[in-house]
Length: 235
Image 1 (spheres, rainbow, N blue to C red):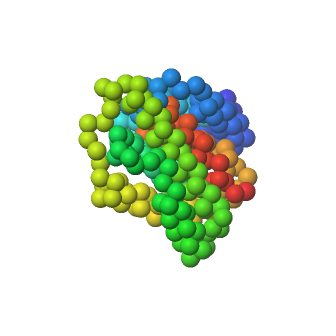
Image 2: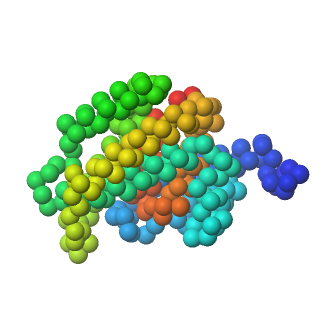
């Protein structure tokens, strides 16, 4: 391997490694889903392999060095964005648990419209493109619904895996989603130069792979994390 004076891969070699990692992570995200519920077999082994190809961090996420390296490889400014996208996806599990076995639908059109209208208005005040920002949040809403549908199907098929507690949507779940919305808007603003860069589509996928590793996402959540990236880059 070609390295620089510090013993790390040079810029060209690192770009090639990142591209290879992106391919590995994308294949992982689009692979068949044998285990759909969060808590099934995590995809950390595959993600670790892809990250090691990129020279990012094939460490135990339980260690300080491994967690720090996987959270923000090479100071990736997109990592706060992908961290929040992953967090929002995991909240979808609680939304599903709150709705399962009730008359509440997975798709709540009025709630979705309320979120998107709010995001559009706040985007303008923050100097963000409201069309792009709304698209990012629409992708996250669709990803969250996909997680809910998969969990519903799994709980129908495996009654013993059904949630034993029902979170309160209004008091427990939506305040978390509201906080994530605010933080994600801020992260999108702070990462705007990186999102406008030509390298964004590579960088955001590597960042998402690292976050899937740190968060120990299973295959269902990893797939939806990657599919929710399509509007993040604007360049």
